[in-house]
Length: 197
Image (cartoon, rainbow, N blue to C red):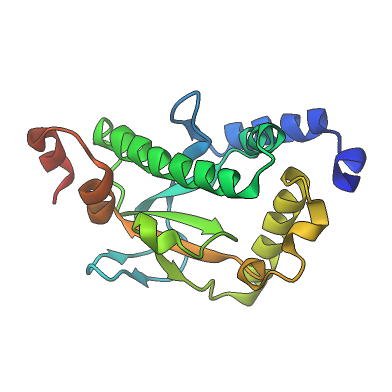
């Protein structure tokens, strides 16, 4: 792959580890490719379908994917359909881990969780609702970075996004904390009550 020749995996891995430390990413489990960043919302007000309103300054959980673990997945799984199943299961398990982490850390009262992704189609099945990125400059920059990560990590490289309308631009996938806990929290009721309904 061209990008791997230009940027060896060892250097990319060093950058990934630095970026994770800088942003305080939480590794939820050794086997999971889902990571969590806790940050204050800096964008516009976001209104979700269940009535949750995310305002600037509210604490949100930013969901990230560990690119190095995805690369390892691709190296061991050649069948794209199997890869899709593994990714879907991994995301479901990751959301359960997010709920468990937030449940055990009530000092982080997140209002919602959010992911910015090229793979937003079908995310509704996981409980997300999809929003277009409003700021065109932000949309351009995020699109460039996520396409780079896709091209770098996927065995097909640049060809992966060619002619695929569903990968044309990234979108925001939002889920309220209420929905997250309702769908993915398996804790006892008395623990759940600390986070509300």
